[in-house]
Length: 86
Image 1 (tube, rainbow, N blue to C red):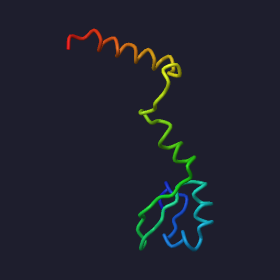
Image 2: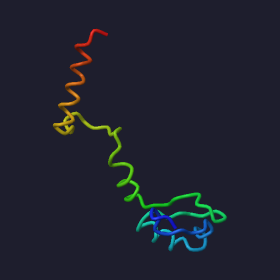
Image 3: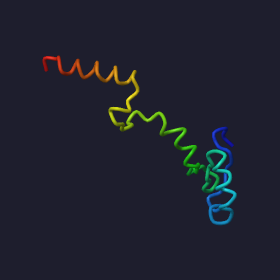
Image 4: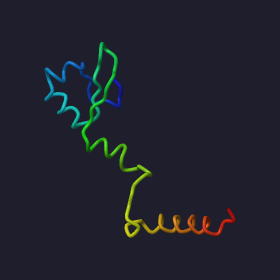
């Protein structure tokens, strides 16, 4: 079993032992096996957000909510674009 996964279950466990699968998914990613081969991963929304959503560079924000360091970078880049000859 990979260190990434908390547990591995055959995909039939979703029908037969769904509670066990969901409990394990609350602790970390769970691998679902199809004929012994990992095919799917189930994880809680909290874990998904922690791993993939927090560092998403495509976050939409109100300009009033932009952190000061990002606002400075944005203003500098916008100034470059405005002052360029293109």
